Each structure stands twice: as structure tokens, then as C-alpha cells.
Length: 291
Length: 288
Image (cartoon, chains in turn orange, purple):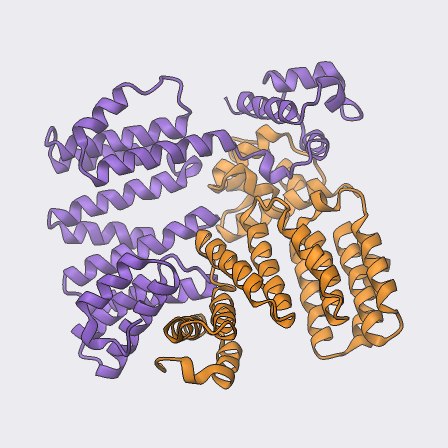
């Protein structure tokens, strides 16, 4: 099956419905309704000129029609389902789902996702030794052009590898890997967000190793990069980390108070109650106010 | 026009990757066809474009974003906004006269926009003329579709001229229209927060605190949902100001300003943190 016309058709239909336009309204003066119907159903491969006119009528930039929502919707739906099963330690259901995905999906990305989960499940089950799990993850990473096909998935698998290292206290290997990952180029906003998550995990690893000074540096970087793209996903975590590192390094009390208080405000403001609770359990005495 | 710039884009990507036409065409199409595409003489189907994009190691989405134009736009925007902020209108108009004539369309529109701003600023034209010219510019057919960010900015600036000249109901009407706009891309979503903030700000100065607070709450919800730090400190500050006017409890007011203060600090926005400290110190639970 050729995927591109299908995904573009899906995207056009999705946008058209979102904007509450009929097929007739969309194609008027551009092409026949029969043709637009074929395009929406992925049965016709349109020229880029036709797409440009359609994009104009939908009032979206042309590049938006190439956002593969079908693929990413399917990918995300399965990813969330599998992650939830893993969280509740329901490995047998997770394995079953990944098996059925492997035999049914047309998307390479979804297949790779299923393979990735299978490795993680088997390692947790004790069916796969950690060394073999790392080896299998590496084989997945060696897929040709994986970085270009799905940078997000590539980074996911690398991070899973780093986590395995950390769990086995192979800190040097983990650190090498983190170092390697932060050298990559992160061009889109989406990837920059993944990079911030990597910096956070790296900071956590350095914390476990009691390398507080090095940790402080990575955390600072995380703060700067979060502020650059105005992203709050990990900002509270970073201030928490910085407060913790500063405390361990016997830094100024006022600095520690400021960091934990900022972390507290951020967790409150962005509705991250689990993290707020953790912070209050561990470092309540440093937080300057409660709202 | 579009076909031509698309061809140029392919050509540029190919040379950046140090590939010859022959290398890129191999397994995709004939070299003659690729040459026609690069010169804007042929309209490729998306299948062919996809195979090209794979060989160029770039996503289809990225392929249709003209990064040169975006960079140029940002560069000129920065420069012109700076003149405008400092009210250096003579310098700005001088600068415009010396601009190269082959600027891409989005940059040209940006320059037009600032030209009206400068002329109004210098009192060459009165604010009504400026508004009608800006409305005309934003109503140009392709503006809303192709340059939605610029479209929204021009609309906001029209609302601002109305507001500055005490035409509040007109300003409000424009903002109400902007609130229902469909903010579908990342850049537009960023702008949406600013629209909400400015609208609430104007309502505050018109003493419509109830409506203003509703707008601010909308901004807070959106920022939290998107984990967007850009305007959240400002929204909390606005909330505090509305709470004060609407006689909320001392406790609520303190929480709003304290949150604004810690968020400004956390977001590295030192200037605004200072402002809260100066103006609303009596409401802060603590200070760093």
C-alpha cells in the first residue's frame, strides 16, 4: 500500500471537517467533487499544485497537509495503550497487543514500536538477560535511516537503552550514551522537547552517581533550553534538581529555597500534583509559601 | 510562482548535500525531469516528491517550508520592531528606502505594515487613515491564508490604534473576532496567548473587570494545557489585578501575585519579577 496519498487524504478530510466545510465547497473552482473525494480517500495521488490550492482554501500552510496525523494518531494510540499496561505491570496483555500489532500493522513505525516494547517486556519478565536486551535494542537502532524515518522513535529506543544501563548501575555506559545523544542535532520543536527530556534523565543519572557538579551543569542547560522554547514540561523538575544538587554541594540556603520554591510554583501552576506531593514530602522545609 | 520556489528549494537542498542532479534523480526520475522540476517547468506529483525527499533526508513537511524566507522575515521583523518600539520613525523610513527590491513576498508585506505604522507615528497621516490602510492590507486576498501570523498582528495593531484613541467598542469587536480565530499551527498558538493577554489588558483599563477576568482565566487554562511558559506569569499578574478590583479575599490576591512573582523568576523574566516586587510587594508571601 502506498502510504502518502492515504495520509494526505486523511489530513485533508480531517481539516475540512474541523473547519466544517463540505466537499463541494472545498473543491469549487479547483477540481471536481469526484476527484476531491478520491483524493480524500487516498485513491488518487494529487499533484502538489492541486494540494496548494486545497491548502489555501482550508487556510492552512501547505506543509500542514504532510503532517501525518493518521500515522501519528495510530502510533500514539498504541503507544499510550502499551505504556499504560507497562505501568500497571500487565506484561502479558502488553505482549499480546504487541504481537497482534506485529501481524497486522502496515506502518513500519508502529511495527518498530511493537518490537521495542517486546524487548522491554521480556527484559522485565526475566525472559531476556539485560545484555541481550541491550543487544536487541541496538539491532532496532541499526535499521537503515531510523533517525530520518522517525527521530522520536530513535531517541526513545536510545533512552530505553540508557535506562537499562542505569538500572544495572552501568553508569559509565549510560553517561557515554547520554553524551552521544546530546551531540545530535535537534531541529524541530518536537525534537527539542525530546532533547529536554534526555537532559533531565541525564541529570537524574548523575544524581544517582552523586556527581552533583556535573549534574548541576546539565540541569542548567535544561533550564536554558526549556526557557528558549518556552516549554514547561520539565522546568519544575530542573529547578527541583538544581535545588537538590545545590543542597548536596552545601550551597547557599537562599539559593536552595529559591529553587525548591520555584519548582513548587511550577508544579502547582501546571497541575502536576504528583510531583508537588513528592516535593513536599522530601523538601517541604525549603518552600517559602503554600498556595 | 509557487512551483518555481519549490524547484529552487529542491535545488538548494541538493547542493547543500553536495549531490549532482544525476545522483538525486537516480531511482526517482530521469535527470531531464529533475532539471525541469528544479527550474519550475514541471509540476511533480506527491509520490515523486516523496521519493526526492527520502533521498534528500528531509521530511515532506520540512520540504515545503521555505526556511530562507522565514529567516529573512525574522531578521527584518526584529529590526523594524526595534525602530518601532523606540519610536525612531524617521530612521525606520530611511531604512526602508534602502531595502533591496527583491525581497520575498512575506517580507514585503511586513515592510508595508511597518510603513503605515511609521507614517502614523510621524503624524504624516492620522490614526483613521492608518487603520483603514492596515485593514485594507490585511484584507488582501492571500494574506489570511498564506501569512496568518502577519494577518493577526496587523489586526491586533488596528485594535490597538482604536484603543489608544479611545474607540473602545471598535477595539473590543476586533478582539472578539480574533478570539474565535482558528489557531492551528505552533506559531499561531503562540500568538493566541498574546491576543488573549492584550484583550484582557484593554478590558482592565476600560474598567470591565468581570469580562477581563474571564479572558485571563482562558489564557491561564490554555497555557497550562500547552505547558507554555510565555505568558503565564503575565496572566497570573492580570488575575491579581482583577481580583483586587473585584474585591476578592486578601488570600486569593496574595496567591495570584506571589505566583506571578515566582513564575516570572522561574521563567528568567527578571524585569517583570522586579516590577511585581516594586508594585505589589504588600501582597507577596515572600521574596527571593
